[in-house]
Length: 248
Ligand SMILES: [Zn+2]
Image 1 (cartoon, rainbow, N blue to C red):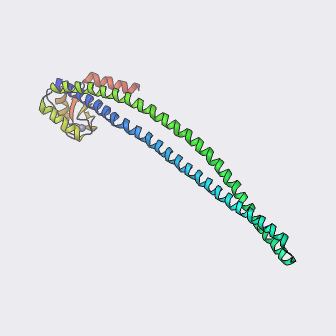
Image 2 (tube, protein in one colour; image 1 turned 135 degrees about the vertical axis):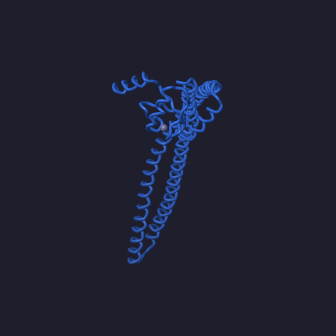
C-alpha cells in the first residue's frame, strides 16, 4: 500500500476518535442538565404540595370558625327555648335546633375529613422531600464526576489533536483537501478498504481494471460509486479476514 494511503487510514481513525471525544464533551453537560431539570421538577411538585397543605389548613380553620358560630347559635336557641310559652313555637324552635345541630355535625365530619387529607398530604410531602434530597445528592455527585470526565476527555482530545497535526504534516495538501472534501460528504469516512473487488464504503463492486490497478499500489484511486479513496490490504489480510469471519 502507498505510504500516503496508510497515513490517510490512520488520519481517518484519528478523526473518528476526535469526533467521538468531541461528542462526549458535548453530551456530558447535556446529561447533567437533564438531571438538574428532574430536580427542578421535584422542587416544583414539592412547592405545589405545600400549597395544597396550606389550602387544607385554611379550609379547616374556616370550617372550625363556622362550626363555633353554629354552636353559639344552637346555645342561643336553647336559651330562647326556655322563654317560649306557646306549644307551637316550642316545637318550631326544637325543629330549628335539630336542623342547626345537623348542620354542625356536617361541619364536624368535614373537619375530620380535612384532617385525614392533611395527614395524607404530610406523608406525600415527607416522601417527596426524601426523593428531592436524593436527587440533589445524585446531582452533586454527577457534577463532580462530570468535571473529572471532562478533564479526562479534554486531555484525550489534546493528545489526539497533536497526533493529527503531526500526521497531517506528512501528507500533501492536495490529498488532504480531497480527503476533507469526501469526509464531509460521506459521513466521516473518506477512505475505504476494498475486499474481493468490493468497496467497503458503499458495498458496490469497483471496475475489474481498477481493482488490478489498486493491487499494484502505484496510484490513488477513488470508488466510481461513492468517490471514496480506496485502499487494498493485500491478499494475506483478505484471507485472514475471511477466515476470521468463518470462525465467528
Ligand atoms: Zn464506494
